[in-house]
Length: 126
Image (cartoon, rainbow, N blue to C red; front, side, top):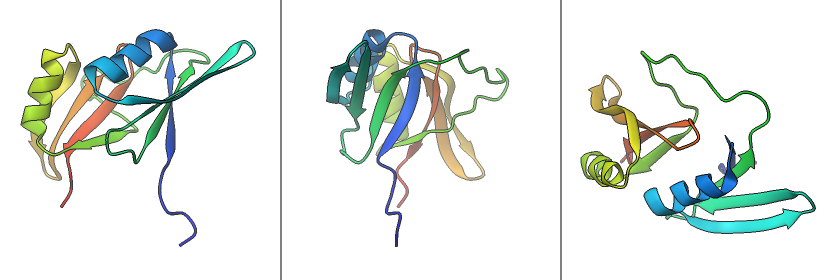
C-alpha cells in the first residue's frame, strides 16, 4: 500500500491561542509543535492516541457556515464511550450542536470548537 493513513488535518481558526486552549484544556490534546516562522506561527496539537495531528492555522477568508438544521463536519473523531465522553466534554464547556443520537449507521454526535468549527464524534469501530 502506498498511502498508509492520515497524519495531519488543517483546522482554520481566528485565534491560535484561544484554539490551543480549547484543544488542550477542553478536549485533552497535547502540543505537538509550536514554532514561529517570521510573522507566521505553525501550531500543531496531537490526539491522545498520537495517531493524528491537527494544524491550527489562521483562517483565510470567511468562517465555515453549515446548515443549522443538519450539523455537518469533514472530520470524525472517535472515543471509547460516547455517552461518557459527551458528558465529560460538556462539563468542560464544549458545545454540542448535536447530542448523541442513534442513526442507521450507528451512534454519533457533533461538537463545536470555540472557533465555530464542527466535528463529528463516534464510538470507536470494532
